[in-house]
Image 1 (cartoon, rainbow, N blue to C red):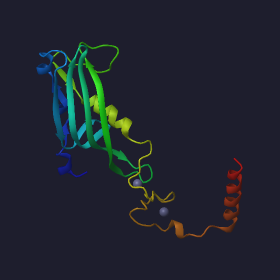
Image 2 (tube, rainbow, N blue to C red):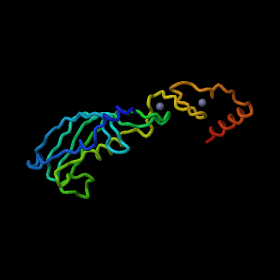
Image 3 (cartoon, rainbow, N blue to C red):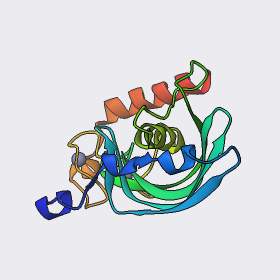
Image 4 (cartoon, protein in one colour):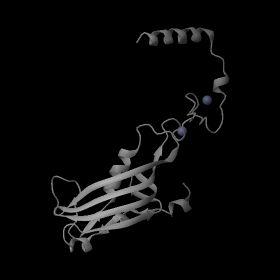
Length: 180
Ligand SMILES: [Zn+2]
Ligand SMILES: [Zn+2]
């Protein structure tokens, strides 16, 4: 990441929404907010390239119900070549922010009337990422011997001939495996 790119991050505090206007209304009242954010770092371990979609905030008897359908790209690392890249995900939110805090839900509206979406989005973004994300379906990975990223070019390791004695060992190894 270059220095100029780093300056384009928005702080996660933009995801703190004051819902005082909703609290003043009766149960059943709702508002739909349009979200359109540039690159945002939700926490040390989760960065979104952008965040777009609609968020519906509804007042109910237990607090504020947050429902949303958001599109984003989450920063992750390719399991094969270890290169950081942004993985596209859809986030479907439906979470109660209780008033006052309650054991039933991890999220609550604070005393100042703020609801912080960052921890919820962080959680959902992590859940939405696959266990083994690939930068592209045909990622060639790293050379196991020299560590060269084979997407960027070949190294000379593969061209070395296998010593015939090791070739026999490799053969035995394969036969072993087929019996497992
Ligand atoms: Zn890769
Ligand atoms: Zn190599």
